[in-house]
Amino acid sequence: MAHPARDVRGRDTECSRPETVLDGWDRIIVSGVFAPGSASAQKGHSLAQREAVRSGFEAALNEAARYLGATSPNPAVGCCLLDHEGNILVTEAHHRTGTRHAEALALHRARETGVIDRVATALVTLEPCNHVGRTPPCSEALRDSPVQDVWVGMSDPNPVAGGGIARLRQMPEGRNVFLLEDFPAFADVHDGCAALLAPFATRIVRQCPWITVKQARDNKGSMIPPAGRKTFTSQASLEIAHRLRRASDAIITGIGTILSDSPRFDVRHVPDHEDRTPRLVVVCDRQNRLPDSWREKMIGSGFRVLVSRDLGEIPSLLADHGVNWAMVEAGPGLLGEIRRLGLWDDWLDIQTTPDGPDRHRVYSHGPTPLRFILDEGARPLPADKAAF
Ligand SMILES: NC(=O)C1=CN([C@@H]2O[C@H](COP(=O)(O)OP(=O)(O)OC[C@H]3O[C@@H](n4cnc5c(N)ncnc54)[C@H](OP(=O)(O)O)[C@@H]3O)[C@@H](O)[C@H]2O)C=CC1
Ligand SMILES: Nc1c(N[C@@H]2O[C@H](COP(=O)(O)O)[C@@H](O)[C@H]2O)[nH]c(=O)[nH]c1=O
Image (cartoon, rainbow, N blue to C red; front, side, top):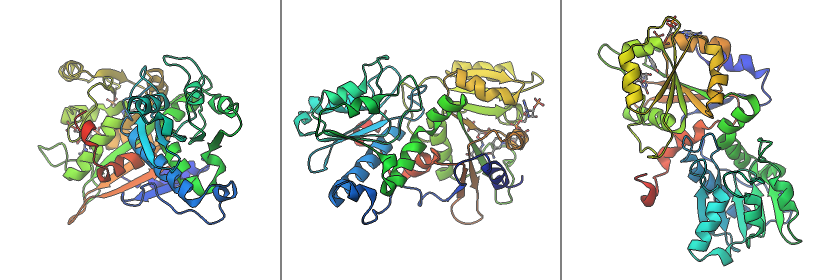
């Protein structure tokens, strides 16, 4: 099949951000250096403070990314609490809808572990909420804590939950709210927060999920596995594909894939969240060819199965089901249609090479949550969470 980059360029005209091509996964870890005289320095932050903010956000992002796919329809959010010297005291994340938000959980842990009086700074990847939902407003939790400085990674695109920054700005003199977007030296950290939020933000703003296509090709460019097999990529690539399954809320596939492979679509090569919501599979099938046996097997394994005769309706259908991030695992037939309609946000192209490791390319229209999927191999799970 032809190279997907052509479509990316085609859609660039509609995009405010330039095309991002990430080649391999070693270059997309959050990192960077501070320019001397940066906005942060002008606003009176020392180098040590800026480094503390950077490493705190990195910790918060990595922790939150582990819950992508578990929090929906809520966003994945991380929070890191620092002491007066900039040391990390607590890093926490939102785990799933209905449970404590990241800030509230981090403050709770700080109280539980007796470090609350040492907390000076809170770094939050998303604007703290300001409404009473299933949990109390995080803006109040921060206001009623010893936190002096709050750093906010992204403002909340959800009109219901916004207003937290304004509320925090009413904190008494001497307590500050900083937005990453005001600090050019933190542009890459801000991009990290945008990438983490992209699935949720897309659903809220566009009423459709973030859609990632995962395409595996052999060394001749074909997507078709050898006879008798379903996959041909390396173990490392399968792990990436299964991390993507774990992080996404739904799989879009085509009837051709079901009939050829009878895919399981479960998460096998990486640890899964025990308590994640049942996965949703949408099968594009216009002629009712879906075998009952496959559907029943999937439902028996805890999946919900929807059938669609109209690919174009799928994004809004998924958004109605609270899906933030959908991945496509389909053959060349459906991928051709998806490309033609421009129904994708990023595209992971895995190509096997004759000798040596597979080659991974990501095509994206902006900060892509795939960075967290590709990056995870470098981050072993903490011992206490390894068995989640
Ligand atoms: N390497 C990889 O990453 C992957 C490879 N594969 C391989 O791909 C092969 C199967 O490929 P293929 O047959 O193309 O299968 P697909 O999964 O791409 O399904 C294609 C079918 O989707 C339906 N469809 C197409 N467009 C639309 C639309 N606009 N709306 C609704 N339905 C639509 C059509 O069926 P109908 O006309 O009946 O509705 C079409 O025949 C297998 O060998 C499998 O192993 C599969 C997944 C991933
Ligand atoms: N061929 C191919 C992939 N193909 C996808 O994996 C599905 C099989 O999933 P499961 O039944 O859960 O093992 C298959 O139907 C197709 O969607 N994936 C990859 O990472 N690499 C590969 O080489």
